[in-house]
Amino acid sequence: METYSKVTRFFFICNYISRIIEPLASRCAKFRFKPLTEDIMSNRILYICQEEGLSLDSDALATLSSISQGDLRRAITYLQSAARLFGSSISSRDLISVSGVIPEDVVQALYSACRSGNFDLADKEVKNVIAEGYPVSQMLSQLFDLVVEADDMSDEQKARICKKLGEADKCLVDGADEYLQLLDVASKTMQALCNLPQELSYES
Amino acid sequence: MLWVDKYRPKTLDKVLVHKEVAENLKKLVTEQDCPHLLFYGPSGSGKKTLIMALLRQMFGPSSDKVKVENKTWKVEAGTRTLDIELTTLLSTHHVEMNPADAGFQDRYVVQEIIKEMAKNRPLDAKGKKGFKVLVLNEVDRLSREAQHSLRRTMEKYSSSCRLILCCNSSSKVSEAVRSRCLNVRISAPTEDEMVRVLEFIGKKEGLQLPPGFAARIAEKSNRSLRRAILLFETCRVQQYPFTNNQAIPPMDWEEYVSEIASDIMKEQSPKRLFQVRGKLYELLTNCIPPEIILKRLLYELLKKLDSELKHEVSYWAAYYEHRMRLGQKAIFHLEAFVAKFMSIYKGFLISTFG
Image (cartoon, rainbow over all chains, first blue to last red; front, side, top):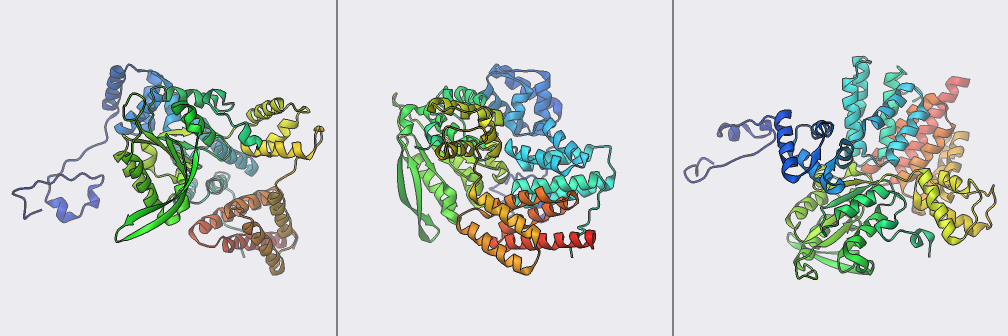
């Protein structure tokens, strides 16, 4: 880098500046890119809709910005997929179905089954999630959002659930079975929510 | 011909379940072009049927004329050449294969085949350069490296071929591949939908269905349409005309697993464990996948257990299944689960009854 600085300029692009070693980073002028604000994103999306002749109501726009999580490229991809699949008038349901996000009521159903403290009910909900073909990794991340934002449980309960979510996610990455992992998560969530003893009681 | 194949809908118009998806797919390919597609959903939900119907919609009846080819691919991998044998299904417009069968060499297969397809691009009637479709099954079984190389090849040759990927769980497909495809979720058919299909087949075959019979088959088949139709045909062979209370035969391996479950509920001892080992081997040698055995075993055990034990048992099931995935020999982990269960259950019995 130093030897040829007369004839060459480097442009580095990365997601995390902390992953670039210090000697490299210190030789560059740094530009930080913040996630796009909602205004900018919705403006751009609306512009695309206008150019492409798509109709998008405000509800769908809100959904789009929430499922894309500040990622404009992802938002545009979803928009295009939805437009190709469903035609020019796009509703928020269409966007959810192309994005692979699990509808809120499905997550809620699983959560309330765990809350009920009835294992068989939770098992039934888990089976349902698998049969509907929802990706379990997605389910875990949406459950996580739900748990973190919930205000009807103690911090300790949240921590217990989140710990299990992390473990299950790792197992899924290793290729473990989706049904068993989700069932385990549901069982642990139930134990945390209903204050059941968490220790493995009959292990000798 | 099995009914499963005989009554597989050939075109998107004739699809009985997932009508909405079929309609959308039809719209998608009206301009003779489509993005890469990723179909995911549980088995027996109709992914393959929809893909075949979609190909027919795109290319007309010629996509039905497939030939099976067992080809050896010569692949340059660094300094040496590898020979990889793989079965492919070919038509003039598409190639279908199961790259995961190549084991740890799956990466080369994916790259090589796409490259070769890209080299000889078909011409369409107007002399325009067309594209071929590559159908890849079981992408979730591909190794991480293969998935990475897949995404590179997808981008590089996107002008000459379209990929249709098919898998059971999209969690196991890397985010990068998923985001390059249009994801289509195929849910398992509901029992009502299955009943409708069974009744349709019954009508076509000219069979008299007693009321509630189709519903009972649908209930037994775990939301897998393929299984429902197979069960239906088995019942037909067994006894016709159908009677109202005709027993629907369970799968023999399921019966076997349920036997194992009651065995280990009855007695928890090393001797019993040894007997169970024999039975597990029997299942494995009959090519029942170990994770299916474990899941079924859990299902059978959960039916019989007290609710306070269920949490613990399901935890260990998940634990041993995960280990099984990391390890090599499934029997160790299956047996470990059985032993663990015995120990837990015995502990429970002692603490309850003294």
